[in-house]
Length: 395
Ligand SMILES: NC(=O)CC[C@H](N)C(=O)O
Image 1 (cartoon, rainbow, N blue to C red):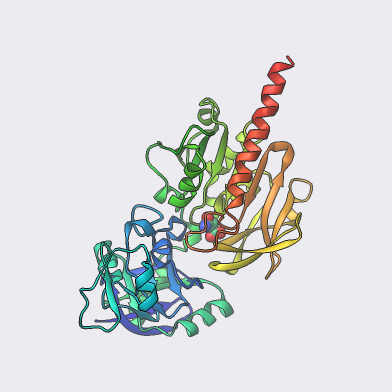
Image 2: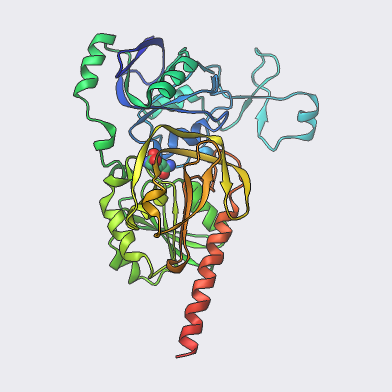
C-alpha cells in the first residue's frame, strides 16, 4: 500500500505503508542511532513526534519486551529508508554459532541462507500494526534529514488515505506540538514502587520516564516510588524520601508548570537529580530559561565534555530544547557541555544538593559511558544524609 509524508514547508515524499494504515501528524525529528529502534519507539520523550531513523535498514532483529522503555510505543509515526519485513532474524555464522550468543535461536528459516528466527521476537511491522503506529518506508531519509537540518524541525503528516494537497491543508489546522502539555499524556496515573533493595528511597517524578532509569536505580539497590507529574512538593516532602529524581519526558519544558513549581519547593530541602526534561525543569525552577534547538540532539553518539575532569565521553541523547547558559549565571555551575555545539549538558548547585544532565546516563539505546552518574547520585544522597545525621548528633 502506498503512503505519503507531507511537511509543513510543502514537501511531499512518497513511500510504502508499513505498520498501521491511516493518517497521523506530529513534529518530524530524526535520530542517528544505528540500533535501538524499539527503545526509541517506546521512549515517552517522543510523544507528539514522528521519528525518522537515519540508519537505512530497520527491523532486522525484531521486537521483544526486553527492548521496551515503557508499556507501549509513544511516537506519533515512524519513517525509515527500508523496513526489514521478512521476520526477525539473527545472522549466525560459524564461530558465532559455536560460541553461542545467549540467544534462543531455532533453525526454522530454511528458505533464507544463514537466517535463523529468534524465538520470542515479533516482527517490527506486526508490532507496529498491533500498537496502531502508522509508519512509512522507502523514503529517502538522507534528503528528509538534510531538510530538517537546514530548515529546523517542522510539523508533518504520514497518510495512506489523503493526497498531499489535502494533508497540507489539514496540517495547518493541527496545533503546534509546543502548545501541547504532553507530560500529562504520558505520566503515570497512580504512584507505584519498584524495590531493588534496601538502599535509598527515591521519589521519581514521572514526566514520561524511561524504564531503564527506574531499573538503573533498582539495580543499585534503591527503592523507587514513581509519582504522577503533578504530585505536590508538600506530599513528596511528607513521605520521608532520601531524594527526588526528575525524569525525562516529552514536549516544551515550560509547559510542565506544575513540575517546575514542585521542583522550586523541593530545592534545598531534599537532594534533586534531573535527567533530560528533568534537567530543563531544574533550570527553570532555578529561574533560568530554555530555548528550542533548530533540530535537536537525537542519537547514540553525542560527545559531551566534562568540564571538571576536562574529558570527553559519548552519550545517548534525545532532546529538542536546551538550557540557556547565560540565564543561569550566579544560579548554577555548568558541569558538562556538548562538544559539538557547546550547548549546556549538565548543571550543579552543590549548596542545594541538586544536579542534572541533559543526556541519558541510562543509555537504552546507546553507550554506557555515563552510567556512573547513577553511582554519583547515590554518593550525593549519602553525603547529605551523613550531614543530616551529624546535625542531629550535635544537637
Ligand atoms: N528526553 C527528554 O527528556 C526530552 C526533553 C524535552 N522534551 C526536549 O525535547 O528537549
